[in-house]
Each structure stands twice: as C-alpha cells, then as structure tokens.
Image (cartoon, rainbow, N blue to C red; front, side, top):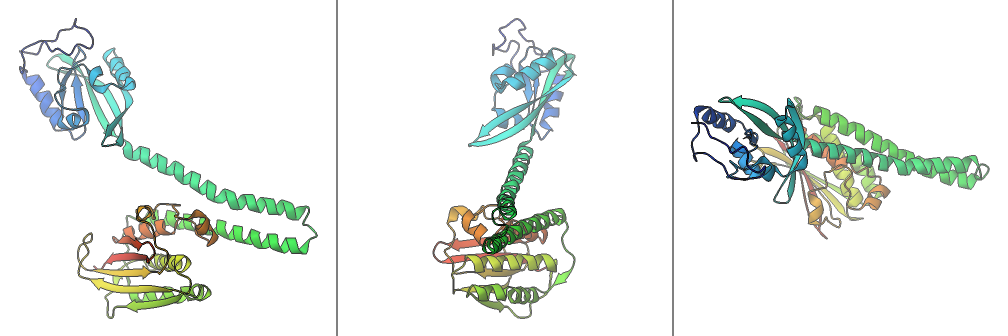
Length: 370
C-alpha cells in the first residue's frame, strides 16, 4: 500500500498521514537508489514533504527529516523558491545553499528536477559541494589584487620621477642621478616580480609531471653556496656547507632544485643575523613520516630573529610577508617560498619550516631518494 498524504493540510504541517513505516516497492527502490549516491540527495513528494533522503543528506541536514515539509528543513529562500518552481512545472532549477558546521562555511549548488516513482511525481534535490570553486575564485581575486598592489607602488614612483626629470630636475645633475638610481631600483623590483610570476606559472603547469632526470644533490648544494657567496660576503655572513658523503642521485629537475636552494640561502642571508652563520646541510634518512622510503634532506638554517608560530603555516602563501616593509627593502617579492613549495610538490617531496623566536629558523627541502 502506497503512503497516503494529507494534501489539504497547512503548507508547513509536519504530520504525516498514513500507515507509519509502510512503503511500496517503488519507494524501497527509491531509497536504494539514493543510498547508492555519494552526494547528498533527498526526494520531496507532491505534498511538499520529504519522502526519502540518503545518508550524506542526513549528515548535511540532520536525521529524522522524513515527513517534514521541505521548507522547514532547508530554510533558505532561494532553494525554497527553486523547489516550488519545479513543483509548479519548471523542468529543472538550481540555487545556492550554504551550510555551517563547526564554524566552517560550505557552499553547495542544489539541483532540482521532477521524477516519477510508483506513479507518484517527486522532486529530487541534489547537493554539489562547490566550496573549492568559491575558494579558487577568492584566491584568484586575491592574486590579481596582490599583483596589482605590488606593481602599483613602483609604477607610481617611476611615473613621478619621470615627470620630475622632464620638468624641475631636467637640468639638475644631482637630482637626476638620485632619481635615476631610485628608478633603476624600482624597475628592478618590477622585473623580479615579473620573473617570479612567470616562474610560478611554469612550476604550477608542470607540477603534475614528476622529473625523470637524475641529479646529485651534493653538487647542487655546493654550486648554490658558491653562487650565493658574494651576497653572503656583502652581508658579512659565513656560509657553512656540510654534505653527507656518497649519497645516490635522486630524480629531479636540476634547474628548479637550484632555484629552491638559491631562494632558501638568499632568505637566510637577508633575514639572518648580521655577521652570523648560515649552515647548509645535506643528509640522508631511512624514512620520513609523510614520504615512503628513504629520503634526502637539505636544511638551511640561520641565526636570525626567528618566526612566531602563527606565521609558519602561511609562509608559503603567495605574497604573504611577516614584515612587508622589510621584505620589500631587501628585494623580496613574496613569491619565493610559494615557488619552492610547488617545486617540492612536483618532486613528490615537501618543504618544511621550523623556527624558534630569538634562535633562528630552519628551512628544509625533503626529497624521496627513489
């Protein structure tokens, strides 16, 4: 016997009329179909009451909802209007739905369409999690805003100095030399930002393809330390290199790994202790908790001020800076560690950051040996 509904009840009456627990074969088939779906789905009868819902829908909306009017369960005007439109004859509809659980907001796209089971018309409502898309859109907007902000300052300075050189400072050699030096510095800043943006784009494009070449990390470490020695000398910083002997080659892209090493060493020199020491250590390990099999590890440690714990998790975000003014003064673009993280991911490794305020920081590149 099919379930009977009281169609002349108040729209929001939650009392189900009929024999409790009695369902015909069609309704059992509907329950089985919904149970096989991994996304939240519920079915609404002609009277506007929920006749079936699967386990993911119960997690999203709560249990024991069968027999309740959909408006008392969903409670969001856009969704309610879309369902009523489909029940009035529209072939299908979509609406946004927002849920909150544990202080976390999740965004869903709901799809409504009519179906038939056992001769009774029902409206099927499915929920598709679009939080990732909303996050991606927000990230893209933030990225464009950050790039615009980073370029606006040097461009504004350049335009101002050009105007000054074309006017009051045209015949002033002292002012001209001063302004040209500043213009060169600002142009260099824009060039570094452009190069880092191009590098980040290339790394992201290649991130899913693991390198095939074999590289010797000891050779890369020695070469990177040698390349950064002039910057270290200028800052009165001593570079110390320690490499474990006879380490096997690893799969990697030599240029990208060299880029990571140069970035980590340069940061240690810039933000470390003046007249201090930057130590670069290459070692091997039998295993790493997050990586299968043996690994090789490059640690770049400084004796700087250290980093507060609440900053550590965000250091690899694009344009994230602990001290924006100081970072710009020393030529940082805010993209170096983001690039390093993507390169580590491409090599199936990881970038690890440890720091104690007042005692310095250690930036580690960990790569699988196989």
